[in-house]
Length: 151
Length: 207
Image (cartoon, rainbow over all chains, first blue to last red; front, side, top):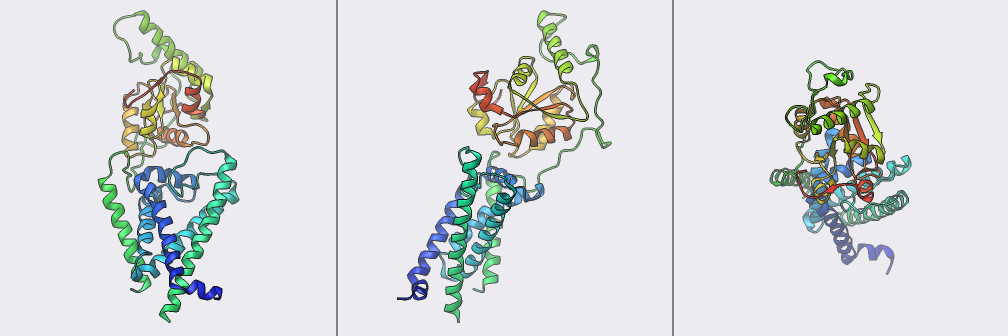
């Protein structure tokens, strides 16, 4: 069986959808439980103006949550995959900018974490970028297979 | 469902959920969608720095009552020392202080403000410190309350958080400056350092 056929197999599509969905929902829950802590994390990135910190901290975790659930429903999967791809690209950009600036921060991807050294945080940021890159590929996989199904 | 419609539907769902969950959240989990900005106490901007008043003219210490008791005299001396060592400096209204300075200020009854989250404050804080969690709701109201209860905005106020890379004490100090305080000292090493040195710590909510 060729790699292309494996990727297009319904089980592979379901695996991608469930993997992406579970990471998104798992990441959303601690942020939903404590929006002020997430606002604190967002502030550390230094990318949003102060006026947008609270709205972003309130809405972004719910976007993650509903996108995660949306991936599990056939009718919403395409839309959810587009949004998941958008989220991953935004997260990748935010981490990349801060890595380039040499700003070691707690990524806040799965809520607040225990205090870490600067080196540990840099390593975590690089791992988070790798993880987000893989999740973006899963979203692309879902979009490509949907497009083939529709055509 | 068309992808664009689905995207709009999911975003609407997220917005509605955020609005409902925030409306139902308790004070420690609630965020103001658009936080109220902190206005300076005097209407004419910019707030002019107050000159250091002579010690004789300073307001008497709030604690203690009655004539010229030794306790009152001691408090007055402590206040005078605070003014002398940390005069209001318009060029540097926000300064960092080290551990020994923080202890010196604490011994003389300077106001200590804790910028950490409420839970962290309840688990342990510098004795007599007041909690103003920077990331929780009604920051502007809490800052206004502290300002209203302060006898002189030129008196040094020490702000701390969890040390290390924590910037919350600096952020709170900036808000306090906007509110009218003129001598803000950030204790950068924060509560972990204070606790590690075995200096007075309290647990629970109110100081």
